[in-house]
Length: 209
Image (tube, rainbow, N blue to C red; front, side, top):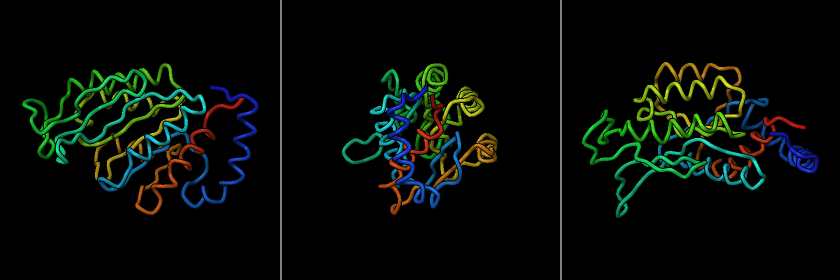
C-alpha cells in the first residue's frame, strides 16, 4: 500500500509529536511488531484498537484474532476470528471431545486450520498488514499454523501479533531472534497508550509513495 500525499503529511506531523515517547517503548522501525504479557492484561484489546485505527486510515488489515468466550462470566473457551471475512471458529473449548489437550481445553484443530490458518494466508496474499493473535501453545498444536506464521514472518508485509508470554517452542524462538522484530510487554501502565503507539509504528513501516 502506498499512502497518498495528504496521509504522508499527516503522518509526519504525528511522528514529530510522538517520536520521543516511541523510543522509550520501541527501538528503531521494525517490520514485525509483536506484543506479549500476562493473561488478561489486554493484549488482544490493544491489537483490536490498533486494527480499528488502521482501518479508519484505509489500511487493509487481515489475519486472525483469538479471544475469550464466556458464558455467565465463566470462560468456556477461545474463539478465532478472521479479520477479513468475518468467519469464526473455535480455537479451544472446555467441552471439546477431540484434539490436543491444553490445560482444561481441547484444541479444535479443524477450526484452527480452516479459519485461523486461512485467515493468515489470505492476509499474506491480499492485505497491507497481517495480524497473528496469538502464537501460543494452542495454536502451535497445528502444523499448518506454524507454516502460515513462517510464511507471514518471512514475507515482506508488516506483521502485528501476540506471542504467548510463556511460549517455548522452536518457532517462537526463531521469531524472537529475528533482527526485524520488535516486541513490547503489555502492562496495566502502558496498555492505554499502546494502540496509538503501535498504530504509528505500523504506518511508519508501510511503503510510502
